[in-house]
Every structure is written in C-alpha cells, then in structure tokens.
Length: 229
Image (cartoon, rainbow, N blue to C red):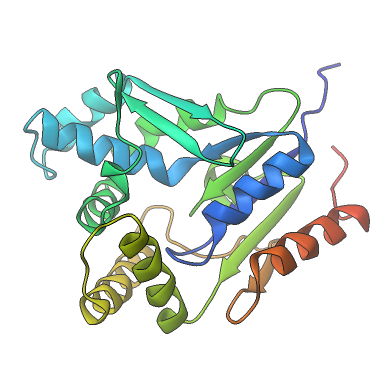
C-alpha cells in the first residue's frame, strides 16, 4: 500500500493571510510548502523576461512546461524563489506582477500545464498547499481544506503595509480597486474560479491575528478533522 502523505490546503483571495499562515503552519507541522500562486506570478514574470504576450496561450504553455524555478525555505519562514537562477522573491510580489498572474491563471491550457508540477510537491513528510484552487482542483482529496477570507478593506490595508515595508510605492485607493477587480476576475473565470471547496472550513480573518488563525487550524487538526484515506 502507498504511504499516506498528510495534506492541508489553504485557499483564499489576495490579502486573506494565506501565505503567512501557510508558512507558519508548515513550520509547526514539519511539512513542505507549496505557494501555488507564486507559480503563476513566476510564469508572468518569465513571460515578461522572454517578451511573451499574455494573450499568447500557446507560448505560455511551452514556457510553463520548461519553467526553471526553485523554492528555498529558511528558518525565518521566508521562501526564496529562484527563476533561472536569479532571486525573484521580491520581483514577483509587486501588484503589477500579481495582476499579470491573474490574467495568466485564467488561461485553461496554462493551468493544465502547471497542474502536474503542483501535484509533484506532495512528498513526505507532508504538504501545506497555499493557493486559490488547491482544495477544489489541484488536491480535491486533501485531508483538510481551509478557505481564508477577509473584508476587501482589510485585505487592501494588509497588502499596502506589506508593499510599503518592502519599499514598494503604492496608493491604497488604487490597491483597493485592483484587489476588487482581481476578486471579480478570479471568481468569474470559467476555469477553476476562486471559491471554497464544498467540504472546506471557511475562516474569516478580518480583525483576527495570525496566531489566532493558526491556532484555529491546529485545533481542527487536533479534533480529528483530518479525513482518513
């Protein structure tokens, strides 16, 4: 029999806290981590580097199939991302790159091209998968599925704070509008729209600390919410 590998999926819109919470949870559980959203951002950045238009789906599929990317974690819960040997950890976190990634993620054949690569991250001792369709499409048989949400205003403030701390200039009003536009685009796309899986636990993180959310998830695990395969 194949050994069961523990798997937790954490989905949600931008600014819901899923990235930070996934990193902390993976550290506490001793699991690997997959930042699936980063793959689309990386692909968008690679398309820019190689001068590939975002509406050229065929070329993007080829690029996705040969994407040279590495995820390297450190002890401070940071994940360095290398694209073709260059550190692009900060470059992919700009709002411009995020918006381009949302456009790329809406292309059906691109999503198929990246699907196998995402599933390959499921290795011992376990995986915490962070994204927007982890529990609905990529890992529908996950042990536990979490969907994080927060008010648009809260999420805009969080992203604003993150970007300012990184030295990236951004306007809060513009950021709020872009987040709302991305939410609409991601929720209405025909392929893998942003929505909770039917068996996901939905957690609203508005006004809630990161530690409180992590403790809620740990509590669910301790209560036996992991589904036996």
